[in-house]
Amino acid sequence: MGAGVSDWRLANAVSRTGQLGVVSGTALDVIMARRLQDGDPGGNIRRALDHFPFQSVADRIYNEYFIAGGKAPKASYRNVPMHERVNPKPLNEILIVSNFVEIFLAKEGHNNPVGINYLEKIQLPHLASMYGAMLAGVDYILMGAGIPLKVPGVLDAFAQHQPATYPLVVAGAKDGDDFTMSFDPADYLERPLPPLRRPYFLAIIASNTLATTLVRKANGRVDGFIIEGPTAGGHNAPPRGKLVLNEKGEAVYGERDVVDLEKICEIGLPFWLAGGYGTPEMLAQALNAGAAGVQVGTAFAYCEESGLRADYKELLLKKVLAGEASVFTDPKSSPTGFPFKAVQLENTNSEADVYAKRARICDLGYLRESYRQQDGEVGYRCSSEPVTVYISKGGDRAETDGRKCLCNSLLANIGQQQIRAGKHEELGLVTSGDDLLAIGRYIKNGNLTYTAADVVATLAKALDPEFVARIPQATAAD
Image (cartoon, rainbow, N blue to C red):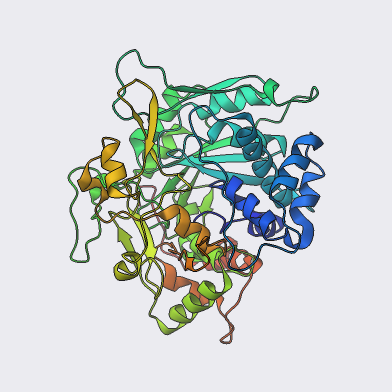
């Protein structure tokens, strides 16, 4: 869905129905800081901070970013510093606190489980973020967009407030280099705390090979898989083999990209299917194929409780009703090199000519690449930053072609668009799965609104035996 779309409100609403509500763990430090600069509407952050175990830290962060009544409409947001392999303590503290806040609010008022989803490629904030979520009692950690072999061991260590390490992928690293990241909870504990509950770990995968690798080589327990196909929103796993584009310029996926569910079943761990499964018909097929359930994103992204800004939501729901909504799987826009799904929407960064007017600025840095500098230290570069800057860091000019600043675009999607010099406003870039038109089933009587509970109730039809009997039976290989 993108950063902040599956926020605490949406996760809370889904969990209240008895399903697993999952918040996006991307950029929570910046999102919380900007909510505070908007005046903390509803006092939600302050309420959550009052439950953080170390009040001196909570108060410092609150006082540093909170603006009573909110910042002026044309004023710029104050940014949180960009992350590095070794973060200063105050930066790790805001990571801990922001993840705590999001999970606390998602779990508030009910006793059902809540999860958080991280991108493995966004490695620099991992350790402090996971510890903060665990302090709030997160029940599930989900991670994809990489190979999260070392996450189970981190969760085991943090449950006992023990130090943990995580390997940082560094371009150009040489034999003997050690770019390991480390985090010791003892450096942040103001008093002893009882052990934490170790959350379940679900790896998001797109291949049988990765599933087998994780089971055999992970440094701790893997509890299940989310099997995500290339029709899912956000970042998609790149196609295997040579990149081939269709007539629209999208990456073409083939037989090598199809996960063999029979082999997944043989592993013996529960799995959920994602990417085009947001209908009762597809849920029924998933269950018939041995899945424990499905992961749904697009249908929830446009419901009342999602964090997607209201004007984008209204425009896109109108397009859905008119049969005009479309999604383009862009092989170039993401600095990660992964294909990224963009909803085509006027006056947003989905339009090449609109994005071309934006100055190349990298001031959030979540999708930066870590690279080895000549002095052996770690540097950071982004293929969507100014071209000359990227090249000066050893980057290949060809890598800058077509790249877009997803960080600023995704924050603009949730109404936290940066304003520069009082007049230059960042625009959004909405992401959705290929089945965007299917959400029309949730829009009743022409109303441009529906709730998370409406989505769950519709999907629950798949549990009705009479409904299931009308669905073509799927095999595990499907």
